[in-house]
Amino acid sequence: MPEADISKVEKNYYTDQPQKNEAFFLKGCNNYDWGFKNRLGRIFNCESGRTVMLAFDHGYFQGPTTGLERPDITILPLAPYADALMLTRGILRSLIPPSLAKATVLRASGGPSILKELSNEHIAMNMEDAVRVNACAVATQVFVGGENETQSVMNLTNLVDAGNRVGMPVLGVTAVGKDMVRDAKYIRLATRMCAELGAAVVKTYFVPEFETVTAACPVPIVIAGGRKLPELDALKMAYEAIQQGAAGVDMGRNIFQSEAPVAMIKAVRKVVHDNMKPEQAFELFLAHANLKRHKA
Ligand code: 5RP
Image 1: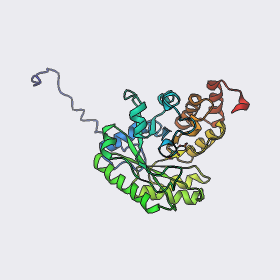
Image 2: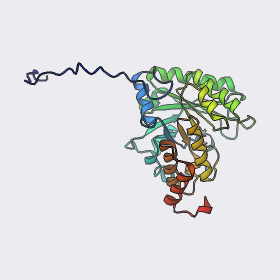
Image 3: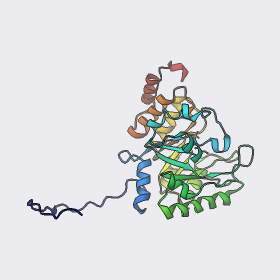
Image 4: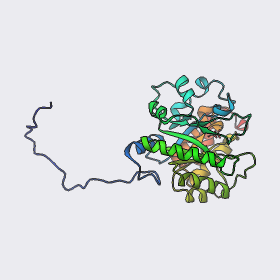
């Protein structure tokens, strides 16, 4: 029992200061519950409204991807510079120290390997397990126009229903199959579908006219890096995406396959959080990487 409130100091109810009722900082996310918003607030930096998510979930369908043969050696040194880690629960439990206070986004879908039809995914994780490991979001892929389009859409909606029950945001990932055109018309369709079907955040690829993609999507969009580019090109892509309304990056190969991954993630942070021009961020990359200019 606390002791009785017998302070002689006059109580102050600050009656001249109305209680603030601020909107949540992420677009389209104001009507979620506290835990849901708190999770999003751990992924996205509330100052910049953006995130640098480090994606290294590739092994869930392609095994030990180049640069991910030993995530304990190649990824752990990068983790301090990421706002969030996108990974599988297997790598989380086996290699990521629980003391690492980073937001995590768990890959929740799986099934086929690179040897089979990739769109034939199912939800491969129980929501209870995501809560158990204190994840901040879960992710599944939607194969719009793909062979198993409807199945992948149902994966998303089932995950959203399960997530809403416990306050867990879902990251909808727009997959681009081998035969699908990667242009603004397609990406607008796929990202908008993810948002309409309940994804709190959408991950997609950067394309020309990206501002129409972000404008038509009512929730935050983060871009995947895609295949490895020269560092300056990857920084230019991140810059363009941010300037055209992206809320961050969810980048993998362009960071962990870089010649100097720590220098690269630091440079990406500058572009994402500080609007640094790509050329200037590239200079920083070179300085931190100690590489010769022609090598990048
Ligand atoms: C595909 C994913 C990956 O996380 C992803 O594509 C991000 O990595 P990269 O920047 O290497 O494209 O969602 O399964």
